Length: 261
Image 1 (cartoon, rainbow, N blue to C red):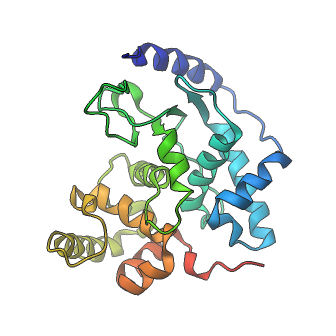
Image 2: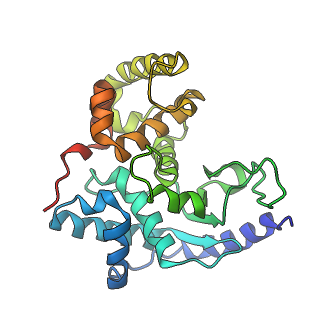
């Protein structure tokens, strides 16, 4: 069965556009969400107590600014927690961060195709997540299966929602090009590009443990290595010390230094 995705999204975003006219008040962190964070999000559990409190506040600030809609599914607390955590992780090193280029997230049950269709009979249904463009500008579409899988396995170097939020960070200057100029600064752009293309060549020569998808283009390279950086920081620093140092500068945090307290 093929669902009327376009109609559903247009209705949802119409409501969203009106609701964004007035900024919502940030709600307190629900106590019942704490166990989800503690058991599902390894990044959070490695934080000190004060940083955990700050992380939770950042999650709620994000949820006050962005609307999450489910398509043919009922949103659960687990979905909201994992999406908000994914949004906070890559920008936690900054005192404040607002995804000004994001107003809504659409959660699909599973994979979908480039036309946002996700019928079980669709052979082209391979996309796990994407940042919208055109009529879906400022929107993100995610697969619920990919969202939940991202936090089930912390050794696979994969995290689809973090990947998509990194694309949004990349897009802050108006273009998704794999060059986080606003974060790195102009002096680091040339070294970043040289390092990026050197590593892409190594991947193509089967001389790197970074997954092949990173060679699709510069934007995907940035998002893929960022997944690795946050999912397996110790291994990433060991295997790719120069890239690790560059991403530390970019994200203003060192995930290898997190310690449980």
